[in-house]
Amino acid sequence: MSTNRVALAQMTSTADVAANLSCAFSLLREAVDGGARLLAYPEVFACIAGRKEKLAAAEALDGPIVSAFREHAARHGLMILLGSLHERIPGDSQRVHNTSVLIGSGGELLARYRKRKLFDVDLPGVRIRESDTIEAGREAAPVVETALGRIALTICFDLRFSEIYRDLRAEEAEIVCVPSNFTAPTGAAHWEVLLRARAIESQVFVLAPAQEGQHNPRYRSYGHSMVVDPWGRVLAERASGTGLVWAELDTGVLREVRATIPMG
Image (cartoon, rainbow, N blue to C red; front, side, top):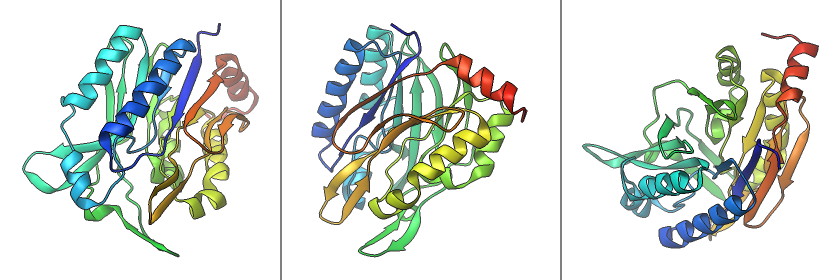
């Protein structure tokens, strides 16, 4: 069994936090049984809801949700990416951070990243203004050394800003996570081409766990959770439905691509 086996969780999260977490833990057990070294969840995996429910579900990073996953990580020796969850901001009852958390295989917090690029848009049939409830982060996307390689954290709409990924390449990132909740229309048009472009231009593995399906009467996401290698090849994909996407990350491919087209 490869030592670089990763699993991406595709989910259809709703306003029911308990049900979302039940699904997440079920996928965690499947990932452990399948020998994953890293399990990555999509953006806002614990709650997709309106303003009131979103604010109510928010918690600090030492709260019960992150703490529970830290315990599982330590118990199973599994690195876990909480793609993002709503992080409570002390003293602010009206907005939260959209925060990605990387947990080490010993249960330690390796890195956290607060989403910087917020999605404010009017589309046919749906109007989304993340800035109404989300406070943008101010720190650059982090890169952290792990047993799998140098992992960088980004979130969803960041994908459209190539300069973020060029900076991560300069920081010697080897694996870039893009947990997402792309709308169905924008996903159908741009999701795959953007993921492959970011992988090619930065010469990194891209891990993109995604939300999929009908979350409420007004919102549907695209799905197609995907792993892309540094040459731009799609290694694995799940078009629809809840479940895991599996892939093996061959570090030899990364070295070969970077040697073939030097961009450092």
